[in-house]
Image (cartoon, rainbow, N blue to C red; front, side):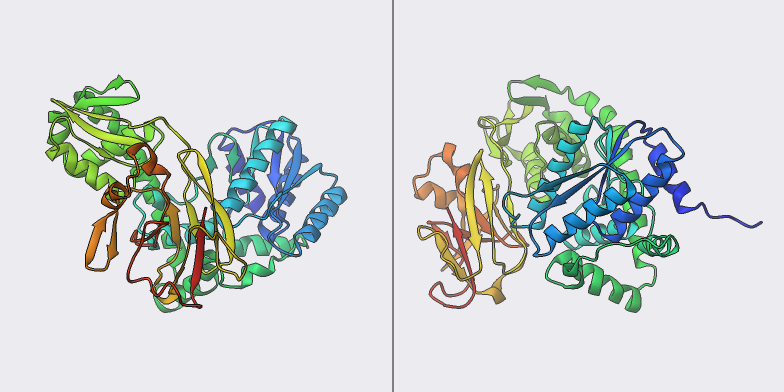
Length: 448
């Protein structure tokens, strides 16, 4: 029997219909191949369904040709008679993460302004494979291995997530579609470009020709695993007698300890997520151990203003202090760049690389060969230590000896490397293995 593969148009419509979306939609269009194919499919779909479309294009201002790309998208939309909304960053983002946040905020504004039900983005199967590999190499768990979800909340839909880039190229060539190539995609300055242009091709050439498809299958399996955990956790929680308390929850300690440590970790992470905090692997490990061995009346700080305490026969997971926004800052490479880290609701400027002066009050130079990127600027976490002459010291002890009160310690930024090792506590201490501070070479970082 001959199996006829559905056309790309049929798969697009099926992907859209699977989310039950009707009415007005916004298509995010950068001008590249992926988003131009998405817009072409959407425009064709409009002829067969009672659906209105609009385009949103965001100019990050990170490339010299970005304004020309915006004009090109506007011209395309006018030729196709599609309404277009263009936004531009006031200040060019300092990182890919900041660019993504600004772009999604603009898409949200356009969706609300136009009264659209959803925004469509052009993420595809190759994006999924690259995302899974990127997270795998950074040591993510099964939650991160899910990769890019088919929808981001109820308003962001990715109908091309099961379509490979080769299929998009074939479609574009067949319908004689034009698009704009981003010249920065050909370089390897960004981690994603290195994965796309060098690492994944080498893996498929030298290790496994089906590596991309295997990575996408891994995302599917991780999604299934997370769905399975979500389905059984309510039953696991039942005997724990979870109760709401001021600023958090409490649960029966004896029943919690009876659980396998891996299940105990799932419970603690789920309860912390309910308080708006996502625990990393090391912090979860500390919480699991403390739940079993901590003494009554004691508590540990889990970061993000959340603590885990033991009170008689119950464990209490709650906010240790009044909540404040917290957002780490990533330094992907030697820069140069600028950005801000948000600690306890306070934004602190950070600059790195380049020749122009950075903060005179708190700045240091680091030997690039000793650094493992990406570096992260964040607040203190339980177990953080810094290696100084003569051994290692707890960051908590350094802050205590500096007479920084407990209520202010979450406002002190730390610079850590890709392995979580503390490089620098601005104004207080720097790791002894990070090079000579007076060296004219190396990466200069200024904070505050």
